[in-house]
Amino acid sequence: MPAGTDPDGDAKMPLPPGTEATLVKVGVELLQRSVPTGISWFTAWLKGKTILVVGQARSGKSTFISYFQHGLFQSELDTSKTTTTRNTPRFQVSLGKDKTLNLHVKTAVELPGQVGATAHAITAFKKKPDAILIFTDLSTPLKGEADRASAAWVKEFCDELEKLWIGKGAHLNQIGSIIVVLNKQDKVDHETMKKCKFEMEKTVKMLKAARGKRQEEVFVMPAIMVANEKGHELVDQIITRLAQQLGD
Image (tube, rainbow, N blue to C red; front, side):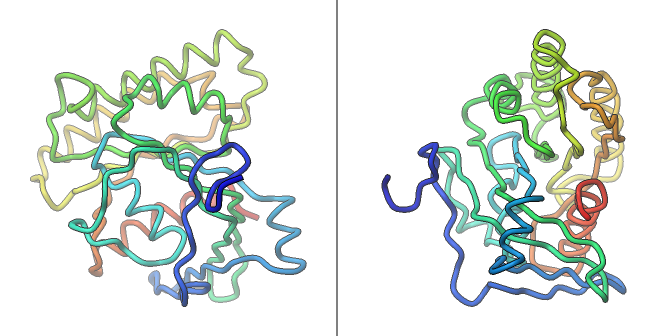
């Protein structure tokens, strides 16, 4: 097996030196990332969740995973185009002053945006992840062709995913969290943001079989993937919501 790949042949994201545990302030809470070792590795193996990150090209998927895993934002100019499926190694996020809420991540999987919404939905169905984060780019048109328009992309993805689950046994679906991320909030006005949020909420309501047994609410949340106070706050809220739905 080539170095840097998992058993399925997908590329793995290496852990940068010095980022094994990063503390980030979140209001009165703390988010701490760590690499499981010893007993915690066994716990991570037993309880680890697979988080699938899908969405439009250039919508911030790679930047989010970097922050999710390491607590560090990539520079927008330094983010290269993702052309293959990429998987993180195991890691853990602990929340709260006493670390009472823990999210054990088996892997966070990023799909390349260029392959399109239908291909993302097919992969989501095959991988059967514990959570799906759907990334959209608010700076693209709301309506139009799915490869460029945010609402059209999400609708195509949801249509295909719902169809697959209805046809292949929705009772087997274990998805515990679906979150739609409206990235680049800083690049649009308030009215555009409201329209996009309304369209996304309307679209994801159609998901029934694809939401799994738990039927948790599908959250639509804004984001800014930049290293400033607002960017950290919004992305931390997404991670916190994910941990609340999947963590222990």
